[in-house]
Length: 427
Ligand code: NAD
Image (cartoon, rainbow, N blue to C red):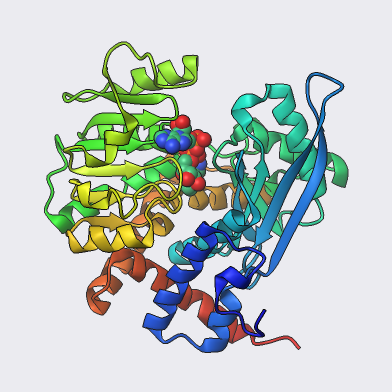
Protein backbone atom coordinates (compact mmCIF):
# COMPACT_ATOMS: atom_id res chain seq x y z
CA UNK A 1 0.00 0.00 0.00
CA UNK A 2 1.29 3.45 -0.81
CA UNK A 3 2.14 5.80 2.09
CA UNK A 4 -0.60 8.18 1.24
CA UNK A 5 -3.35 6.02 -0.17
CA UNK A 6 -5.40 7.57 -2.91
CA UNK A 7 -6.80 4.43 -4.43
CA UNK A 8 -9.61 2.91 -2.35
CA UNK A 9 -9.02 -0.51 -3.91
CA UNK A 10 -5.74 -0.77 -1.97
CA UNK A 11 -7.44 -0.49 1.40
CA UNK A 12 -8.88 -2.97 3.91
CA UNK A 13 -12.26 -1.35 3.45
CA UNK A 14 -12.39 -2.00 -0.27
CA UNK A 15 -15.93 -2.65 -1.48
CA UNK A 16 -18.07 -1.14 -4.24
CA UNK A 17 -19.85 1.20 -1.81
CA UNK A 18 -16.58 2.33 -0.18
CA UNK A 19 -15.02 3.04 -3.55
CA UNK A 20 -18.13 5.01 -4.46
CA UNK A 21 -17.97 7.02 -1.20
CA UNK A 22 -14.27 7.81 -1.66
CA UNK A 23 -14.73 8.69 -5.34
CA UNK A 24 -17.56 11.03 -4.38
CA UNK A 25 -15.46 12.63 -1.64
CA UNK A 26 -12.43 13.00 -3.95
CA UNK A 27 -14.55 14.57 -6.68
CA UNK A 28 -15.88 17.20 -4.30
CA UNK A 29 -12.54 17.71 -2.50
CA UNK A 30 -10.81 18.27 -5.85
CA UNK A 31 -13.55 20.72 -6.85
CA UNK A 32 -12.95 22.59 -3.56
CA UNK A 33 -9.13 22.43 -3.94
CA UNK A 34 -9.05 20.91 -0.46
CA UNK A 35 -5.71 20.79 1.35
CA UNK A 36 -4.15 17.50 0.22
CA UNK A 37 -3.13 16.48 3.79
CA UNK A 38 -6.71 16.82 4.97
CA UNK A 39 -8.07 15.12 1.86
CA UNK A 40 -5.84 12.12 2.46
CA UNK A 41 -6.77 12.01 6.17
CA UNK A 42 -10.52 12.10 5.53
CA UNK A 43 -10.40 9.34 2.95
CA UNK A 44 -9.94 6.58 5.54
CA UNK A 45 -11.84 5.87 8.76
CA UNK A 46 -10.11 6.71 12.04
CA UNK A 47 -11.16 3.47 13.77
CA UNK A 48 -12.55 0.23 12.37
CA UNK A 49 -13.45 -2.75 14.53
CA UNK A 50 -14.21 -6.13 13.03
CA UNK A 51 -15.51 -8.85 15.36
CA UNK A 52 -16.73 -12.42 15.13
CA UNK A 53 -18.77 -14.09 17.82
CA UNK A 54 -20.80 -17.24 18.52
CA UNK A 55 -24.57 -17.06 18.22
CA UNK A 56 -26.76 -19.79 19.64
CA UNK A 57 -29.90 -20.39 17.56
CA UNK A 58 -33.22 -21.30 19.14
CA UNK A 59 -32.38 -24.87 18.22
CA UNK A 60 -29.95 -25.16 21.16
CA UNK A 61 -27.25 -27.29 19.52
CA UNK A 62 -26.77 -24.90 16.60
CA UNK A 63 -24.10 -22.26 17.23
CA UNK A 64 -23.21 -20.04 14.29
CA UNK A 65 -20.25 -17.70 13.88
CA UNK A 66 -21.45 -14.19 13.11
CA UNK A 67 -19.45 -11.24 11.69
CA UNK A 68 -19.94 -7.74 13.11
CA UNK A 69 -18.40 -4.31 12.52
CA UNK A 70 -18.24 -0.83 14.02
CA UNK A 71 -16.44 1.91 12.16
CA UNK A 72 -15.80 5.46 13.42
CA UNK A 73 -14.83 7.68 10.53
CA UNK A 74 -13.95 10.93 12.32
CA UNK A 75 -13.35 11.73 15.99
CA UNK A 76 -12.65 15.44 15.49
CA UNK A 77 -16.13 16.87 15.91
CA UNK A 78 -17.32 15.23 19.17
CA UNK A 79 -18.58 11.70 19.80
CA UNK A 80 -19.34 9.63 16.72
CA UNK A 81 -22.86 8.76 15.68
CA UNK A 82 -24.40 6.29 13.28
CA UNK A 83 -26.78 3.38 12.89
CA UNK A 84 -26.38 -0.37 13.25
CA UNK A 85 -27.45 -2.36 10.22
CA UNK A 86 -28.50 -6.03 10.22
CA UNK A 87 -28.24 -7.55 6.74
CA UNK A 88 -27.06 -10.87 5.30
CA UNK A 89 -24.41 -9.22 3.11
CA UNK A 90 -23.11 -6.37 5.27
CA UNK A 91 -19.30 -6.03 5.24
CA UNK A 92 -16.53 -3.78 6.53
CA UNK A 93 -16.35 -1.78 3.30
CA UNK A 94 -20.06 -1.00 3.32
CA UNK A 95 -19.96 0.04 6.98
CA UNK A 96 -16.85 2.20 6.40
CA UNK A 97 -18.54 3.95 3.47
CA UNK A 98 -21.68 4.63 5.49
CA UNK A 99 -19.59 5.95 8.41
CA UNK A 100 -17.99 8.47 6.05
CA UNK A 101 -21.41 9.54 4.78
CA UNK A 102 -22.50 10.05 8.41
CA UNK A 103 -19.59 12.45 8.94
CA UNK A 104 -20.76 14.63 6.07
CA UNK A 105 -24.40 14.32 7.10
CA UNK A 106 -23.79 15.48 10.68
CA UNK A 107 -21.61 18.34 9.46
CA UNK A 108 -24.14 19.43 6.84
CA UNK A 109 -26.91 19.88 9.40
CA UNK A 110 -24.47 21.23 12.02
CA UNK A 111 -24.57 18.46 14.66
CA UNK A 112 -21.60 18.04 17.06
CA UNK A 113 -20.78 14.50 15.89
CA UNK A 114 -18.40 12.64 13.62
CA UNK A 115 -19.71 9.74 11.55
CA UNK A 116 -19.87 6.08 12.55
CA UNK A 117 -21.72 2.97 11.43
CA UNK A 118 -22.15 -0.60 12.62
CA UNK A 119 -23.29 -3.80 11.02
CA UNK A 120 -24.00 -7.43 11.79
CA UNK A 121 -24.00 -9.95 8.97
CA UNK A 122 -27.30 -11.74 9.58
CA UNK A 123 -30.70 -11.73 7.95
CA UNK A 124 -32.99 -10.52 10.75
CA UNK A 125 -36.08 -11.72 8.88
CA UNK A 126 -34.86 -15.29 9.22
CA UNK A 127 -34.46 -15.01 13.01
CA UNK A 128 -36.93 -15.23 15.90
CA UNK A 129 -37.29 -12.25 18.25
CA UNK A 130 -35.31 -14.13 20.90
CA UNK A 131 -32.53 -14.78 18.39
CA UNK A 132 -32.37 -11.11 17.37
CA UNK A 133 -32.13 -10.22 21.05
CA UNK A 134 -29.25 -12.68 21.65
CA UNK A 135 -27.32 -11.49 18.58
CA UNK A 136 -27.81 -7.88 19.67
CA UNK A 137 -26.62 -8.44 23.23
CA UNK A 138 -23.52 -10.36 22.14
CA UNK A 139 -22.65 -7.85 19.41
CA UNK A 140 -23.03 -5.04 21.97
CA UNK A 141 -20.60 -6.85 24.31
CA UNK A 142 -18.09 -7.23 21.48
CA UNK A 143 -18.09 -3.46 20.78
CA UNK A 144 -18.71 -2.26 24.35
CA UNK A 145 -15.35 -0.54 24.82
CA UNK A 146 -15.89 1.29 21.57
CA UNK A 147 -19.27 2.88 22.36
CA UNK A 148 -20.62 5.20 25.07
CA UNK A 149 -22.46 8.53 25.46
CA UNK A 150 -19.21 10.54 25.12
CA UNK A 151 -17.62 8.21 22.60
CA UNK A 152 -19.88 6.65 19.99
CA UNK A 153 -23.68 6.52 20.01
CA UNK A 154 -25.41 3.91 17.82
CA UNK A 155 -28.93 4.19 16.39
CA UNK A 156 -31.26 2.06 14.25
CA UNK A 157 -30.67 1.46 10.56
CA UNK A 158 -31.66 -1.15 7.98
CA UNK A 159 -33.01 -4.26 9.75
CA UNK A 160 -32.86 -2.83 13.28
CA UNK A 161 -35.49 -0.99 15.29
CA UNK A 162 -36.30 0.49 18.68
CA UNK A 163 -36.41 -2.93 20.34
CA UNK A 164 -32.86 -3.63 19.19
CA UNK A 165 -31.77 -0.24 20.55
CA UNK A 166 -33.48 -1.04 23.86
CA UNK A 167 -31.42 -4.26 24.11
CA UNK A 168 -28.20 -2.38 23.29
CA UNK A 169 -29.02 0.13 26.04
CA UNK A 170 -29.86 -2.63 28.52
CA UNK A 171 -26.72 -4.64 27.76
CA UNK A 172 -24.47 -1.57 28.01
CA UNK A 173 -26.18 -0.37 31.22
CA UNK A 174 -25.93 -3.79 32.84
CA UNK A 175 -22.20 -3.90 32.19
CA UNK A 176 -21.36 -0.36 33.36
CA UNK A 177 -23.54 -0.90 36.45
CA UNK A 178 -26.00 1.94 36.03
CA UNK A 179 -28.68 2.98 33.58
CA UNK A 180 -27.13 4.79 30.60
CA UNK A 181 -29.88 5.82 28.18
CA UNK A 182 -27.59 8.22 26.24
CA UNK A 183 -25.53 5.32 24.84
CA UNK A 184 -27.98 4.78 21.97
CA UNK A 185 -30.75 6.70 20.27
CA UNK A 186 -33.90 5.42 18.66
CA UNK A 187 -34.86 3.63 21.92
CA UNK A 188 -38.43 3.16 23.08
CA UNK A 189 -39.67 6.29 24.93
CA UNK A 190 -40.03 4.21 28.12
CA UNK A 191 -36.21 3.87 28.19
CA UNK A 192 -35.41 7.53 27.55
CA UNK A 193 -36.17 7.46 23.85
CA UNK A 194 -37.65 10.59 22.39
CA UNK A 195 -41.09 11.09 20.99
CA UNK A 196 -41.07 11.58 17.21
CA UNK A 197 -37.80 9.64 16.58
CA UNK A 198 -39.52 6.86 14.67
CA UNK A 199 -41.11 9.35 12.28
CA UNK A 200 -38.05 11.62 12.10
CA UNK A 201 -36.25 10.49 8.94
CA UNK A 202 -39.31 10.27 6.69
CA UNK A 203 -40.83 13.40 8.17
CA UNK A 204 -37.57 15.37 7.96
CA UNK A 205 -37.10 14.29 4.33
CA UNK A 206 -40.56 15.39 3.29
CA UNK A 207 -40.26 18.66 5.27
CA UNK A 208 -37.88 19.69 2.46
CA UNK A 209 -40.45 19.00 -0.24
CA UNK A 210 -42.17 22.43 -0.16
CA UNK A 211 -38.83 24.24 -0.60
CA UNK A 212 -37.68 21.80 -3.30
CA UNK A 213 -41.01 22.09 -5.12
CA UNK A 214 -40.88 25.89 -5.00
CA UNK A 215 -37.38 25.79 -6.44
CA UNK A 216 -38.36 23.61 -9.41
CA UNK A 217 -41.82 25.16 -9.86
CA UNK A 218 -43.79 22.05 -8.92
CA UNK A 219 -47.30 22.17 -7.44
CA UNK A 220 -47.39 19.90 -4.41
CA UNK A 221 -51.14 19.52 -4.14
CA UNK A 222 -52.03 16.37 -6.08
CA UNK A 223 -48.39 15.63 -7.04
CA UNK A 224 -47.81 11.91 -7.59
CA UNK A 225 -45.26 10.14 -5.38
CA UNK A 226 -43.56 6.74 -5.85
CA UNK A 227 -41.63 5.21 -2.96
CA UNK A 228 -39.17 2.30 -2.89
CA UNK A 229 -39.08 0.71 0.56
CA UNK A 230 -41.95 0.69 3.02
CA UNK A 231 -40.09 0.37 6.31
CA UNK A 232 -39.39 3.08 8.83
CA UNK A 233 -38.33 5.77 6.35
CA UNK A 234 -40.69 4.88 3.51
CA UNK A 235 -43.80 4.67 5.68
CA UNK A 236 -43.38 8.01 7.42
CA UNK A 237 -42.28 9.70 4.21
CA UNK A 238 -45.47 8.38 2.59
CA UNK A 239 -47.58 9.64 5.47
CA UNK A 240 -45.95 13.08 5.38
CA UNK A 241 -46.46 13.31 1.59
CA UNK A 242 -50.13 12.44 2.01
CA UNK A 243 -50.46 15.10 4.72
CA UNK A 244 -49.02 17.68 2.29
CA UNK A 245 -51.74 16.81 -0.23
CA UNK A 246 -49.67 14.57 -2.53
CA UNK A 247 -50.95 11.26 -3.90
CA UNK A 248 -48.77 8.28 -3.03
CA UNK A 249 -49.45 6.20 -6.14
CA UNK A 250 -46.87 3.42 -5.70
CA UNK A 251 -44.86 1.73 -2.97
CA UNK A 252 -42.59 -1.32 -3.10
CA UNK A 253 -40.76 -3.51 -0.61
CA UNK A 254 -38.96 -6.87 -0.64
CA UNK A 255 -42.25 -8.71 -0.91
CA UNK A 256 -43.71 -6.80 -3.87
CA UNK A 257 -45.28 -3.54 -4.99
CA UNK A 258 -48.62 -1.69 -4.89
CA UNK A 259 -50.07 0.80 -7.34
CA UNK A 260 -53.13 3.05 -7.21
CA UNK A 261 -53.34 6.00 -9.61
CA UNK A 262 -55.83 7.76 -7.32
CA UNK A 263 -53.50 7.48 -4.32
CA UNK A 264 -53.03 4.73 -1.75
CA UNK A 265 -54.51 5.04 1.73
CA UNK A 266 -51.13 5.16 3.49
CA UNK A 267 -52.39 4.43 7.01
CA UNK A 268 -54.28 1.40 5.74
CA UNK A 269 -51.18 0.09 3.97
CA UNK A 270 -49.12 0.69 7.13
CA UNK A 271 -51.63 -1.27 9.20
CA UNK A 272 -51.51 -4.12 6.65
CA UNK A 273 -47.69 -4.24 6.72
CA UNK A 274 -47.70 -4.17 10.52
CA UNK A 275 -50.00 -7.18 10.50
CA UNK A 276 -48.53 -9.25 7.67
CA UNK A 277 -44.90 -8.09 7.45
CA UNK A 278 -45.04 -6.89 3.83
CA UNK A 279 -46.99 -5.22 1.04
CA UNK A 280 -47.83 -8.35 -0.91
CA UNK A 281 -51.50 -9.27 -0.74
CA UNK A 282 -52.82 -5.81 0.20
CA UNK A 283 -56.39 -6.03 -1.05
CA UNK A 284 -57.22 -2.40 -1.95
CA UNK A 285 -54.60 -1.68 -4.64
CA UNK A 286 -53.16 -3.28 -7.77
CA UNK A 287 -50.07 -5.41 -7.45
CA UNK A 288 -47.04 -3.93 -9.22
CA UNK A 289 -43.68 -5.27 -10.30
CA UNK A 290 -41.17 -3.45 -8.04
CA UNK A 291 -38.74 -3.27 -10.98
CA UNK A 292 -41.09 -0.77 -12.69
CA UNK A 293 -41.03 1.76 -9.86
CA UNK A 294 -38.29 4.10 -11.02
CA UNK A 295 -39.78 4.51 -14.49
CA UNK A 296 -43.27 5.40 -13.25
CA UNK A 297 -45.00 8.54 -14.41
CA UNK A 298 -44.83 10.64 -11.26
CA UNK A 299 -43.53 13.98 -9.98
CA UNK A 300 -41.70 12.82 -6.86
CA UNK A 301 -39.57 9.71 -6.40
CA UNK A 302 -38.40 8.58 -2.97
CA UNK A 303 -35.85 5.75 -2.77
CA UNK A 304 -36.17 4.64 0.88
CA UNK A 305 -34.84 1.08 0.88
CA UNK A 306 -31.24 0.19 0.04
CA UNK A 307 -28.15 1.61 -1.67
CA UNK A 308 -27.16 1.48 -5.35
CA UNK A 309 -30.65 1.16 -6.84
CA UNK A 310 -30.71 4.13 -9.23
CA UNK A 311 -27.97 3.20 -11.67
CA UNK A 312 -26.72 4.04 -15.16
CA UNK A 313 -29.11 1.33 -16.38
CA UNK A 314 -32.34 2.92 -15.10
CA UNK A 315 -31.58 6.62 -14.36
CA UNK A 316 -32.63 7.76 -17.84
CA UNK A 317 -36.08 6.22 -17.23
CA UNK A 318 -36.77 8.43 -14.21
CA UNK A 319 -39.65 10.77 -15.04
CA UNK A 320 -39.94 12.43 -11.63
CA UNK A 321 -38.97 16.11 -11.30
CA UNK A 322 -37.77 15.70 -7.73
CA UNK A 323 -35.91 12.77 -6.16
CA UNK A 324 -35.86 12.81 -2.36
CA UNK A 325 -33.20 10.34 -1.18
CA UNK A 326 -34.40 8.66 2.00
CA UNK A 327 -32.08 5.66 1.71
CA UNK A 328 -28.33 5.96 2.08
CA UNK A 329 -26.45 5.89 -1.21
CA UNK A 330 -29.41 4.99 -3.46
CA UNK A 331 -27.94 6.72 -6.55
CA UNK A 332 -24.64 5.68 -8.14
CA UNK A 333 -22.26 8.35 -9.43
CA UNK A 334 -23.02 7.46 -13.03
CA UNK A 335 -26.76 7.69 -12.39
CA UNK A 336 -26.30 11.04 -10.68
CA UNK A 337 -24.75 12.47 -13.84
CA UNK A 338 -27.70 11.23 -15.90
CA UNK A 339 -30.29 12.64 -13.47
CA UNK A 340 -28.50 15.99 -13.36
CA UNK A 341 -28.24 16.27 -17.12
CA UNK A 342 -31.94 15.38 -17.43
CA UNK A 343 -32.81 18.24 -15.06
CA UNK A 344 -34.03 16.03 -12.19
CA UNK A 345 -33.66 17.90 -8.88
CA UNK A 346 -32.05 15.46 -6.41
CA UNK A 347 -32.16 16.15 -2.69
CA UNK A 348 -29.17 13.98 -1.70
CA UNK A 349 -29.15 11.44 1.13
CA UNK A 350 -26.62 13.33 3.24
CA UNK A 351 -29.08 16.21 3.47
CA UNK A 352 -32.46 14.55 2.86
CA UNK A 353 -32.32 11.77 5.42
CA UNK A 354 -30.50 13.79 8.09
CA UNK A 355 -33.77 14.14 10.02
CA UNK A 356 -33.10 10.79 11.70
CA UNK A 357 -29.75 11.76 13.12
CA UNK A 358 -31.07 15.23 13.98
CA UNK A 359 -33.82 13.83 16.21
CA UNK A 360 -31.29 11.29 17.52
CA UNK A 361 -29.21 14.29 18.53
CA UNK A 362 -32.26 15.71 20.32
CA UNK A 363 -32.71 12.35 22.06
CA UNK A 364 -29.07 12.30 23.22
CA UNK A 365 -29.32 15.88 24.52
CA UNK A 366 -32.56 15.04 26.39
CA UNK A 367 -30.99 11.91 27.92
CA UNK A 368 -27.89 13.82 29.07
CA UNK A 369 -30.06 16.51 30.66
CA UNK A 370 -32.81 14.20 31.89
CA UNK A 371 -35.26 16.74 30.55
CA UNK A 372 -37.69 15.76 27.83
CA UNK A 373 -39.24 17.93 25.15
CA UNK A 374 -42.74 17.82 23.70
CA UNK A 375 -43.47 16.43 20.25
CA UNK A 376 -44.33 19.87 18.91
CA UNK A 377 -40.97 21.28 20.10
CA UNK A 378 -39.13 18.41 18.42
CA UNK A 379 -41.01 18.69 15.14
CA UNK A 380 -40.51 22.47 15.02
CA UNK A 381 -36.75 22.20 15.76
CA UNK A 382 -36.38 19.39 13.21
CA UNK A 383 -38.05 21.44 10.49
CA UNK A 384 -35.95 24.47 11.35
CA UNK A 385 -32.62 22.59 11.21
CA UNK A 386 -33.52 20.68 8.02
CA UNK A 387 -34.82 23.71 6.18
CA UNK A 388 -31.92 25.92 7.24
CA UNK A 389 -29.48 23.29 5.95
CA UNK A 390 -31.49 22.96 2.72
CA UNK A 391 -31.44 26.67 1.99
CA UNK A 392 -27.70 26.93 2.81
CA UNK A 393 -26.99 24.01 0.47
CA UNK A 394 -29.20 25.49 -2.25
CA UNK A 395 -27.31 28.79 -1.93
CA UNK A 396 -23.98 26.98 -2.35
CA UNK A 397 -25.36 25.04 -5.30
CA UNK A 398 -26.43 28.26 -7.04
CA UNK A 399 -23.27 30.18 -6.12
CA UNK A 400 -20.82 27.42 -7.08
CA UNK A 401 -22.93 26.18 -10.04
CA UNK A 402 -22.97 22.61 -8.75
CA UNK A 403 -25.70 20.06 -8.08
CA UNK A 404 -27.22 19.71 -4.61
CA UNK A 405 -25.15 16.63 -3.69
CA UNK A 406 -21.89 18.39 -4.46
CA UNK A 407 -23.08 21.52 -2.66
CA UNK A 408 -24.12 19.54 0.43
CA UNK A 409 -20.81 17.68 0.54
CA UNK A 410 -18.89 20.95 0.11
CA UNK A 411 -20.72 22.37 3.11
CA UNK A 412 -19.98 19.30 5.22
CA UNK A 413 -16.34 19.01 4.16
CA UNK A 414 -15.73 22.73 4.82
CA UNK A 415 -17.07 22.41 8.34
CA UNK A 416 -14.95 19.34 9.08
CA UNK A 417 -11.89 21.00 7.54
CA UNK A 418 -12.34 24.11 9.71
CA UNK A 419 -12.47 21.92 12.81
CA UNK A 420 -9.43 19.87 11.76
CA UNK A 421 -7.37 23.00 11.09
CA UNK A 422 -8.46 24.53 14.41
CA UNK A 423 -7.44 21.38 16.35
CA UNK A 424 -4.14 20.87 14.55
CA UNK A 425 -2.11 17.65 14.46
CA UNK A 426 -1.18 15.74 17.63
CA UNK A 427 1.65 15.61 18.68
P1 NAD B 1 -36.32 -0.75 7.28
O1 NAD B 1 -35.63 -2.02 7.50
O2 NAD B 1 -37.31 -0.26 8.28
O3 NAD B 1 -37.09 -0.77 5.87
C1 NAD B 1 -36.47 -1.09 4.68
C2 NAD B 1 -37.54 -1.27 3.62
O4 NAD B 1 -36.92 -1.46 2.35
C3 NAD B 1 -38.44 -2.48 3.85
O5 NAD B 1 -39.76 -2.16 3.46
C4 NAD B 1 -37.85 -3.52 2.88
O6 NAD B 1 -38.80 -4.50 2.53
C5 NAD B 1 -37.48 -2.62 1.75
N1 NAD B 1 -36.52 -3.18 0.82
C6 NAD B 1 -35.35 -3.81 1.09
N2 NAD B 1 -34.76 -4.20 -0.04
C7 NAD B 1 -35.56 -3.80 -1.06
C8 NAD B 1 -35.49 -3.89 -2.46
N3 NAD B 1 -34.48 -4.49 -3.05
N4 NAD B 1 -36.52 -3.37 -3.19
C9 NAD B 1 -37.56 -2.77 -2.61
N5 NAD B 1 -37.67 -2.64 -1.27
C10 NAD B 1 -36.69 -3.15 -0.51
O7 NAD B 1 -35.16 0.34 7.05
P2 NAD B 1 -35.26 1.91 7.19
O8 NAD B 1 -34.87 2.29 8.58
O9 NAD B 1 -36.56 2.40 6.65
O10 NAD B 1 -34.06 2.36 6.25
C11 NAD B 1 -34.24 2.46 4.85
C12 NAD B 1 -33.07 3.22 4.27
O11 NAD B 1 -32.99 4.51 4.86
C13 NAD B 1 -31.70 2.60 4.47
O12 NAD B 1 -30.90 2.86 3.35
C14 NAD B 1 -31.16 3.34 5.68
O13 NAD B 1 -29.74 3.34 5.71
C15 NAD B 1 -31.72 4.72 5.42
N6 NAD B 1 -31.83 5.57 6.61
C16 NAD B 1 -32.59 5.19 7.66
C17 NAD B 1 -32.73 6.05 8.76
C18 NAD B 1 -33.62 5.72 9.91
O14 NAD B 1 -33.78 6.59 10.78
N7 NAD B 1 -34.23 4.57 9.97
C19 NAD B 1 -32.03 7.27 8.78
C20 NAD B 1 -31.25 7.62 7.67
C21 NAD B 1 -31.18 6.76 6.59
